[in-house]
Length: 267
Ligand code: MLT
Image 1 (cartoon, rainbow, N blue to C red):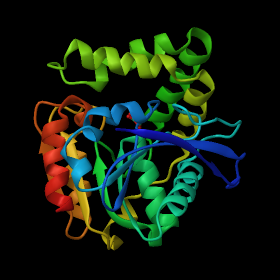
Image 2 (cartoon, rainbow, N blue to C red):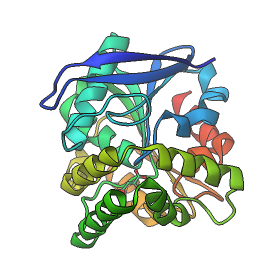
Image 3 (cartoon, rainbow, N blue to C red):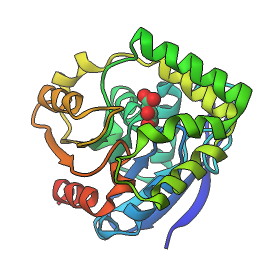
Image 4 (tube, rainbow, N blue to C red):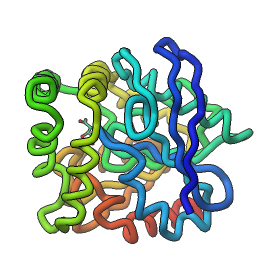
């Protein structure tokens, strides 16, 4: 059973926020960090699967997402990471296994850089270490324009064709659409501004000392397998597993295959 509660985090350079956490399972703590502009619901099938026998799984709604409160800040990856650090300190005495998908992966990079003592291991799934290119920053400006003028249904219309593998089910598409449509426009804008500002983490990769697993969907066009391969090759001792038949949302599209890869890493 998944239990939900909120944890108050200090201002961290932004406004105070109530961060919602959704927990199940047993054993050491592992935090699950969702992508843009999603929430804890993307982890539903993973949380109801075999990993809950190995870890206390905690899906965090990042500031402004899901059941967490928002704020007027730009959601830099550093601000989001400091929120996650406050949650981790409230929930665990020791370091924690961290798993982030896409934007959640960028937050995991910021957490690792700012609070290395809190991180036991990293699962970086469907994500990248590089900063945005000028073209990607311009696309985010266009995304902000769409969100503010047309709303999140139009955001979902634009994102959905890129997020999932061609073979994804209608149920997967409906779940993704629901999460995107329910995201507040202010959150979409705050995320996009923060994503535009995120730094290039590639110079840090050779200095990583935590056990790291890199996962990617073989049909991920947003953070493609070639980038995941380069990222894994640059991190000492990192393992790479390709989740076949999935796009950018591997843990939602094939939770069994994705969970098996993580279970092997966490064993
Ligand atoms: C995500 O899934 O979090 C986004 O695709 C990340 C991004 O836009 O870079």
